[in-house]
Image (cartoon, rainbow, N blue to C red; front, side):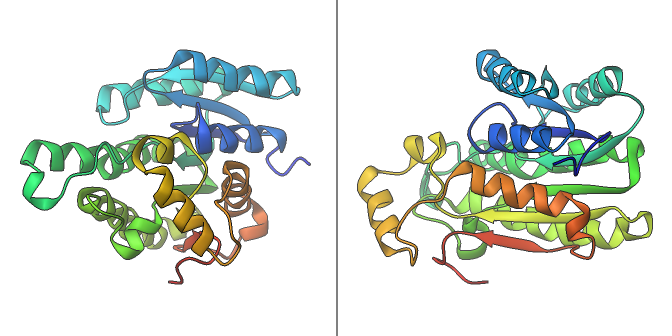
Length: 251
């Protein structure tokens, strides 16, 4: 398939797990992909290797997407590698950081989680937009936590992800005249290192068993949704936040 032939995509947090799956899927459909990573060059280079081994085009660019200077360099390296325009932006980067209840949080933790998950989307999108071709697509990552408040100790994370959904709706209106569509995906329990780190095995098993489909999701399933939203097949979907959780939550 060549849905993204001659198109350039930036995937923040594109080195592993869902980010890797998104990077590989977009490349498999013809996109030239910039794989952004923060602190694991080995994962990023492995993602690039997977893409190039299959005949695709990709480069890895390190950058902390919470820092404006790094974001600016990310965009500059993208243009240097693949030309004057960006056609697809996928804001995957983010994380729970840690589980803390309100009485355990301080201002520094709160600000860090919101910066990582929400301000980063603002910084990257703002820097990309002057270089985004009219008719482009932005896909943001929220979470089921942004819908239902998340599990224990996820108040800061769920608040940030709710903000991503609101930003998505606002951007969809603002960028509509340029025919730039902005949508959002809201994953539930997906089999990734995120849940390996932050969710107890017994909780994962309970959630999977209680899901109508009886299992966790997989990263390639999320990537397929992202690719659809970025493609012309979704040409009249704009401002949507789409759940992918096997039926555990209905918005």
